[in-house]
Structures are given as C-alpha cells and as structure tokens.
Image (cartoon, rainbow, N blue to C red; front, side):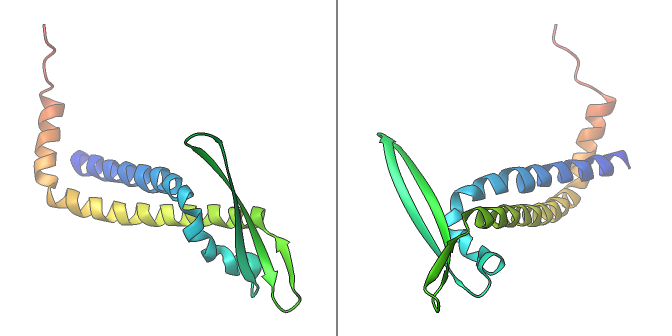
Length: 135
C-alpha cells in the first residue's frame, strides 16, 4: 500500500511540476501565436490587431513591445486593450498548464502502473535494506 501511494504521489508531483510550473513559463514566448485566442473575451465581435515595436539597445539584445487594439471597422475607431489581452493570455496559460498536468498525470499513472511491481520491489528493498555508508 505504501508503495502504491508513493508512486501516486511521485506521479502527481511530476505532473504538477511539469504542467503548472514548466509549461506556462515556456508558453510566455508564444504570445504572437496565442493572442488571437483571447480576441472573443477582450474584443467581442470587433477585430483584434497587434502592433509590434522592436528596438535593439545592445548587439544580440532585442526588445519587442506589443500593443493590442480592438478595431471597429464600421466606425473606424480603435482602442488599446493590451492590459486586458495580457490578463486573458495569463488565464489561457494557466488553463493550458492544468490541462497538460492532467494529461501528464494520466500518462505517468499508466506508465507507473505498468511498472509498479518493479518499482515497488526496488523501493521496498531501498526502504528495508538501506545502502550502507562508505567508510
């Protein structure tokens, strides 16, 4: 029972670290490809437009500033919704991270359940017969 519980905890920790910790931080760099998914929440039925301004203060260092607008084609007006878009983008990153965590947890449980006997024997041996310290 202890072995199965430790395998379950290990799978949960692995999936949470990868899904909630690693994935959202790597998605941050893909704003250009994911920001259109926030359009319906931010702009409603208006068109979303992205403007980028890049500068290079030092060789090899490029700063890009994103400005997002909701454009009303009928009235010919636009409004800056950059802050709202980034807020929705953060929510999207968290949702993707939790989704990845769930998938990784399921996959790791499948892998661990297939190898549970071997893992259990190794853990039981390690717990009951610890490795003696070197002299």
